Image (cartoon, rainbow, N blue to C red; front, side, top):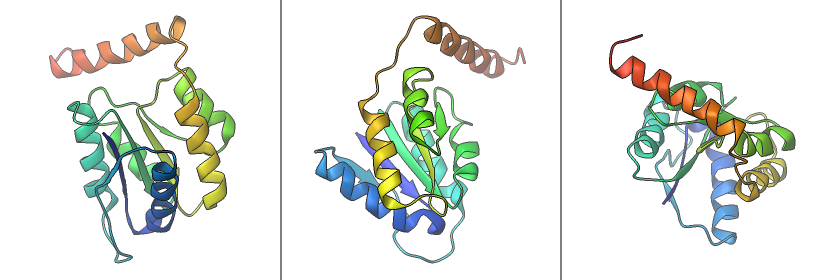
Length: 151
């Protein structure tokens, strides 16, 4: 399952990306928000971060005004590798080198066309493994150490 969520600052871009994902044949579940009323981004970042961390979803996209807040929230969850991207290069590298499982976008920073292009690059990119897997293993070890109280 593929999840998407936004706050009010990312609502318009979220709707654009949802349409794009559906055009690509991707089954996407929208976890909110569904109107332009002011909301707190942590509430929506938590929904997607928690679900990806728990293995209930393989991937997700989060959108707030800049993407910064959603990145902070999502990366609190073990196993989540949320990447804030802003151009085609960061979209590709977030998957090829970091195997990002949550993509984060700034709704007030990107046009719909640019965001669609970047999401497509992320979806089509392939994790390279190798030395990059070793680095992800180190991140996982840090998460384990925190859970065990060693850090």
